[in-house]
Length: 453
Image 1 (cartoon, helix red, strand yellow):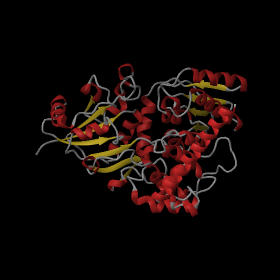
Image 2: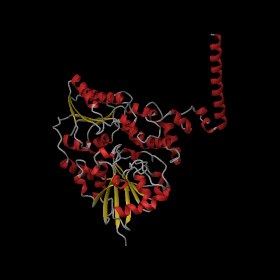
Image 3: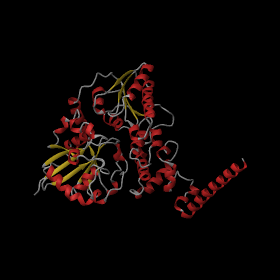
Image 4: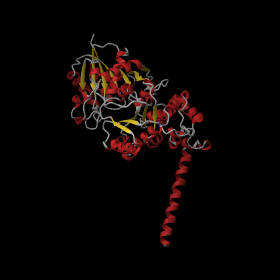
């Protein structure tokens, strides 16, 4: 009987903490060998510290028998870009088995972000390996980003996730009837306590401070650098309006230094005690050590861990504008942004911004998921139509694009009396001809006017 080697793949410290909590909870059977395969997906991996060298990793290392590097295995290729040619897959599997001492082991894979490389590449290389997928953030509540090859999707046994939005079931991989399993929150908090005790020392933080979470959205092309600076300033002003005179800014590790300087200028103007937290720690470590009075962000997962796991007040800002700018509509950040906007209170306390009723949240996510990926979830059309008929209005219309609803023939698009148009080829041809004729008339008028002059 061959031995079993479990390969756990991770690219973030938060993801490894999730895996450690799942292991401690008995969600994985005891294999003969447990390997942590580390991905470094940064734009320049050569200049970015590897996950297993980051502060706070050591308490997690003991959950695994060995730590390996995917970047080292495929050097000089980038993990996010390299995929083998189909004919080379058997060759590369033999290469990895030799490199990692797998021999004839029965391999089990535990992957994150299975829709894209490098996780998808690993799944394709070990062609017969059963797969568990784990989620280290809010994206698991949304649809599968890309249509998975059934040779990969049918091998997925379960989705393991944190209970970030209690009562909400993830949509990810449900097209393959993959069941979802929750990592118990106490187990995750226990792992985080270990990171808190062993992590780097934090500066003394004031009591009841407001924590601002930076996400570096301009690097994703979602906001301009100026818009993101303005968002951070609005976070600070909102905290001050809520009575906080001490503010802690936790910038994204790769964000430019000028973001901090813009806040420092505003803090001087408002007379606020500002602390910029340059120490590379998880936000959850900060929550455990400092117990802030308010956590503010756009759509960071940490807003939900603060609210659901640490019982801290959390507020969102900028989500409405973000939802307008996310392109294409099926952008995988859409559902996390929708959840932040729908669940968390608005920092600026505007009217009409009350949280979406909890009993309709699952229906909302199903409707958004169908609008994002109608070809992957065709069976969700009736549920999406029912939700939009009952709830599409001023509070929820920001979650949908009218053009998208129209193209899919969903309520909220064209008026009901014209709802047949998206499905009527003859009507579409007539509309196109009318548009072309109108353009031709305009050009003729313009030429005529030019001759008269």
